[in-house]
Length: 127
Image (tube, rainbow, N blue to C red; front, side, top):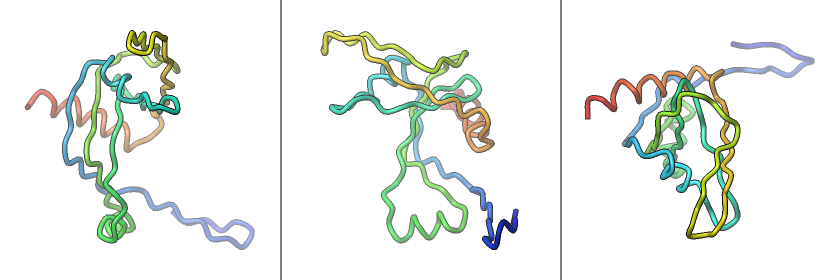
């Protein structure tokens, strides 16, 4: 999709293929726990009843070449089924003697994330 805007050419070039190298369904608490870092928490994504995180491959020349061709690589996806979206999820972590809050980003508007959520549900039953 191309659009001219005040002399600047804008081009939308969506991902045409997502390669998921590994995926695992985990408990919600474990998924929240993995997002805790020494400097705070890292958000999770929610789409169509799936709460998930992903790890990208390091940006090597080959990965960048694929990316520019529309092919994205996710090294690993961790997910849990959470039927309703909530912008913050609490994790009562006894180790830290604290209640930690993890921000959740609703990515329901992303066609890519919708397809990922559906694919995870369909393929987790096959493993």
